[in-house]
Image (cartoon, rainbow, N blue to C red; front, side):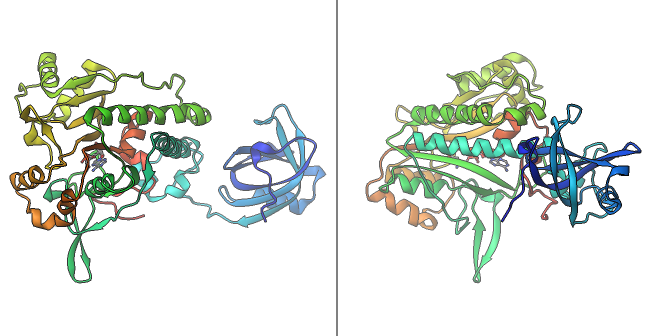
Length: 433
Ligand code: AMO
């Protein structure tokens, strides 16, 4: 059906049909160029006005920018053309006309603010540097999936409409489910855990999570993509090993498949983070933060790491690092405590120097302890019976983690706002497109 040649594949000395968007028309008088853009790149179409059919010249040069055209002609080599070739057209068909006024300029010559860009994402993604972000994102997901397979995982999909929350009760989006109260899921946490007790044992999921965060920040979304991992017979240190492997694989995948995109984005020194991410205990972490002297108030045991604290620590460490052995009280009920110190949990976070990427830990797999944990956190175990019940039928020790896909891409490409890493972000104000 599609007999066209991509701009990047057009070879001199052939007849070809190219199709795409009118990036620009350059009229130099006797000679004019239509620069056609498609997913592969750009190609120049040459109009020598005096030597060509008048209608052809009129159609080709009269078309508005960003219209879709189909051009058939002879591909000839031309040193001065951006790709070394140009098309001398026999026919130009305007397939879909664009309005003369555009809400944003895909050539990037006129800047648009983020809000205008997000309102007009289709046009925004016609820009090379924006498209490149999403090519990188796709490469990240591909590499991550491949790495999970290497690790012996099975990919699963779990429900997004659920009866209960898991990550603290305040950040839930309620929905009506045939007259019953239901919620958009905050995390596949409980479902992935249930699968380590199934015949699958080691699983991963890439899917949406929903958080009713009240405030707009450059690092929070109300719908994010979570990359989740869970494995039977793993402890928290095994889970951290797997986490490091997957994060590094994402960088490796981008380095392997996205050289062109990295160039477009201006990354000359893109590098894969070195192995053996440092593992700092929570206690060491707060000591190091306090030692930086960057905070107005010293951190004490049990304090969460504030954004300022994360920045101070990130600067001090200077690379990806884990924070381990968090106080039990700040971690959720499903995280297991250390056997020799119930005040300390096996929970960990993976930090990029600028922000948190991952939470994880070994899970509480002993039925009685799990029920106790629910009660301590003020949750009713009855509401979670579908989950707790399975812990009575042979649930192996297990561990896992959740990695925010957008934060991974954001930190990898040094994007200033997490929304840059989502095609159609959901935030406090934005519900469409
Ligand atoms: P947590 O709530 O820390 O842990 O989420 C894990 C990771 O998901 C990403 N993330 C977000 N990204 C953007 N916007 C948000 N609102 C948002 N919320 C979370 C972050 C975060 O580090 N069940 C546990 C994981 C586990 O233990 O396996 C959980 O959901 O990158």
